[in-house]
Length: 419
Image (cartoon, rainbow, N blue to C red):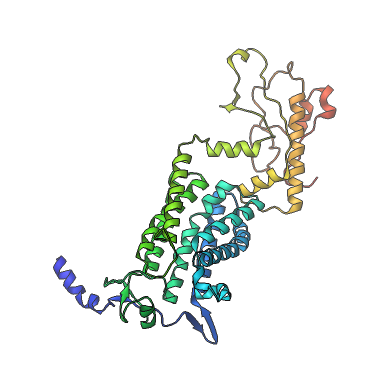
């Protein structure tokens, strides 16, 4: 059966090209408009990365797609500048005597490490300005980095550059006679398509990072270190295949040395960080939002938890303290995927602060001699008209307050309604 199937596929396989052809030039013509394919691939990679990172920011509740667009406006130019600077510094001999060529980015020549270093640093700065936490932001954005690289690497195919050693494999890369001769080989030689190897690896890395993040929920810095380790592992072997001229360090290509060093640093950080004790991320987030609002409160089965030694006495609760800031309200709104205007933010902050004052007043009431109500009456819900439950309306709350305290006993407003 298998032999018959292969025999049937024979004509199809025989008609397939024995190698990967390269474009005749590095431009794409759209009528009178000529686009540099190298720059177009980078742009498409950036768009895909911004799309993925924006979706992940919203899914994690730490930001929005608009936040990601803002980050990209700063991080992408910084990444391109850093990539070009790294390339020029490490291959400065190519530009000696013609330094203006260093600005011709469309002709190729971007060093990934300069782009990652400067782009990520500026991106973190921009994210913090938008109120996005470091760990959550890195977790959301990290898988988008190899996605951008996977698409951007096809710019090397358009420019017929950065190919590997000669090979006659079925997926070998064809280049023009001039490119083959410039690399030191006769016309018609086919080469390893290193751009394709790196592109496919980056796609796998992107998917792997998403899976790890969903499965293990590691910190954002750890996910970023895993990305760095995964990319440098493959990049080292790709550098070993390449035949283009490059600066050497101790007899090795500079990018080989950098890949080894960065890989070792990333793995060392992962081993160190993963061994550290870590708090519950959900509990930590809740504690961060609630910090300065309520010191402590524990409720189980509808009853306030107290120590055994206090069970016979009055129920004791921790005092209500702290203030509510607009930054805390904005953070909670972002977690709930709400976009508040400045006026709405001010209104919510004022009303929540009023409610906090209300709780503080309740905490100060002398209720030792007041018998607790065994079951609240099923009256109209104070906050939501569509909910019927065992709650008290405002008049009953006021009537139940001790007369001596009625002058300072305030009922909180309905959240979201202007006073």
